[in-house]
Image (cartoon, rainbow, N blue to C red; front, side, top):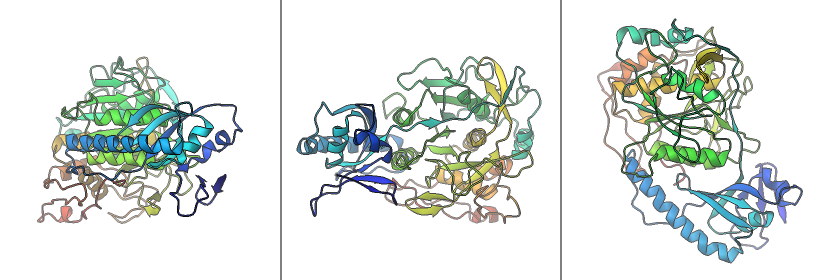
Length: 486
């Protein structure tokens, strides 16, 4: 019997035996499929596994190699346990075909029949079963064939124009930026030579864009130059991009690839941050934990997760997933008047069943000009356009101070943001977060940070500050940034 718990928005398969193990949570989007009310005989799902008991040595934060090896070790234990329990639950190869394993969040991609979903839900070690959600990207407004010879409006709004005057060599040089989007046109003149690697969802290949959205966001991060083609915030940086990601399964594949592009944890080939101008279609909210685990893994390995808040404003509590994770830099969008854009999703966010202060920071997001496929340039609006500006700004901060940690970067933005609508400095509101980004102030503050010693993942990170600096003293230590699912 299937019992619907509408207040939680989930489906639970009831075993009917007192004291028995609770069955796995099932995505409500699979209800018709399970009940035989769908024309489809099989469906692709994401099966999230429980965290297994283990004797693995926990890694230190930001030791990427050890974090990856730890995650892979957890996956080995979890799948071994699953193989044994699946027999007891009656799982058969006719009903469940495993396609891929994702150690980044302890999940499996599988093709299942309705009976397969039911048997998996009864299997010890299975935490949840998700439908294969869509990934959402917006569309361009208009295009022009001309490169951008004049500094655009958002250079002045964010203080980037003053950065270029005071620090003319600051362009993100030697910083590797990650980018998950529709792809990127690597032949575009503004991006040529800047794409270090491109993953098309299956293999490393030629950087191409399935749409235009990814080329635009990549251009805003590092396109052009700071002399006669003003579109990128950090044009000296390099990009690794994962594109053609259309659903939850594919985006998990891209997120895992970002953490270890060449499949060798010992190789220092991961980006320092990843720009994400996408969200998962959240008709049930069930995708949150699967993505939250992956975001936690990024942050534990030292990768800053930068996410667009979404374009579902002006209603409150409309931020997309997984931007509400506590360790993301969640980005809102402002307009030409520096007011919050009407479409920008509002906070607060929700994380671990509690309200959380999200978004974190705002950046210009209305009619932002950047690259488009086919040697074109054009304007787009959305938090998708604000997010790569923050990603580019992070590249500048890391060039100034390569030892900055993800929590330090978040706190720098919060401390240096320009307050909005009369909000006191350092205060948060549901529209702008802590205010509109001020890249000049952020760069100056980044240069004055010192780094602390790494802590085990089970312990909080201590931020080391210069105690004599009154501006630095305003920064409160961040909340512990742990494996939230460990």
